[in-house]
Image (cartoon, rainbow, N blue to C red; front, side, top):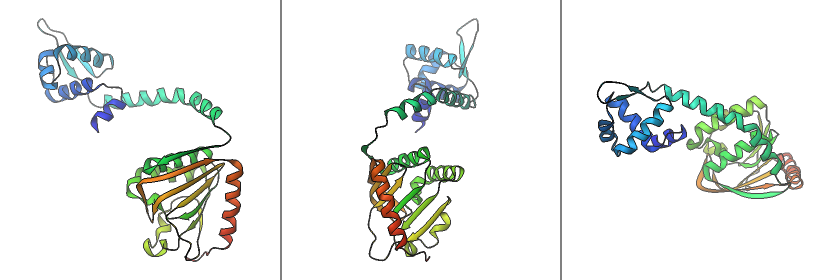
Amino acid sequence: MENQIYESLGLSPNEAKIYESLVEIGESGISNIAVAAKIHRRNTYDAIKRLIDKGLVFEIFSSGENLYNAVDPDKLKELLGERQTELEKILPELKKKFGKRLAPEEAYIYRGHEGLKNVWHDIIRVNQEVFTLGAKAQWLDPKLEAARIAFFSSMRKQKIKHFLLFDQEIKNQMPGFEKQLDFPKQFRFLPKGYSTNSVINIFGDYVVTYTGIAIGKINDNAVLFVIRSRDLAESYRKWFWYMWGMSSEKK
């Protein structure tokens, strides 16, 4: 995990090892740093120079061997901020290109928890009403907590309305579940006998069909079939409103 964090900040594995070693042992010469970081001396010297350029290490000049030391770890926050700034510069052009290449109709697959996060990103990007058929509050899966909080926050901020038709079973298996749904919503319950292990989302021109869903949980191997089609999405919305009228408002 730490290696991934350093990599996201633009540090190579050798640079990360050297920086951590200097944080621990303090000012040292190249030989000692190489031993502490378990890196060949020549590679250590090259990595040290890059760390100096990045402002994470400084050189101490002396009459003998020059020494090196790590700057305060708070400097890593600055690197993160710089990365964020760089990303913000290129995002508008990337989004413009992304919008141009979207086909009028297309189909693809997402998988598991990361797949659901992708659907949430699409929902926020499209910024239109959401309709869920066979809802099971799968977003309350503990593995999704951080992403869920961010998603609910965006739903509230953008005032995206969400209409949900829940399976009957959720009332018994997750009593009081509706108190945890922190976004603009209206919901009803499907009639008994119409529960499934699948879910359908409709928003904008998108229809997303889930398999591998249970009450309050999404399986690691769940498959999310995503279809982008204006005509199909509109058809699903009509079917949804018919089922909405046939469903119960009782909690």
